[in-house]
Image (cartoon, rainbow, N blue to C red):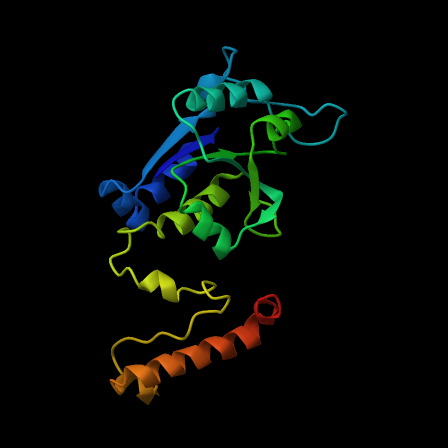
Length: 226
């Protein structure tokens, strides 16, 4: 997989992309992630990428010229499955969406900032709009990192334990079961006996019941829409 990220603030992405699973996935050659500075495509000597909105109002809007130039330059090199814009009014992001996106070969993530991007970009270049929640961030960089992390970990060979992602929350529209590790008794708080039994069938049944109970208590809506 190849992922290109277009942003006016590339340094916001440097740390997370070079740590933990994302770093290992790149080191293994399982994914290539390239960050492109939108200011390199600005046409004036001040490297301006935003301007005030027509019609007035607070905030700034990303200009169409540098965005079109950057994405069209990428599209000259390869065909992209999606050009994704991270925005609060996009489609809600789910595990199912992550599963589907993990099958793509080439993706572009466009990070908005300030008050967003010129609408002509959305209508012409963007093929998919994603929201990671009903709240507003300063820019799309953090949202892009969330989506990238969620789909890269699904790529074959990224996780050391290939089965662990199958047990993740939301894969079966259920929240994850409680997890425990050593010591078995910490300050009088003991690990459930079933997990120490070695009986894999009983452990699986216990975890399934815990998933169901936790989902009913915390996210009953997941069961209602399954």
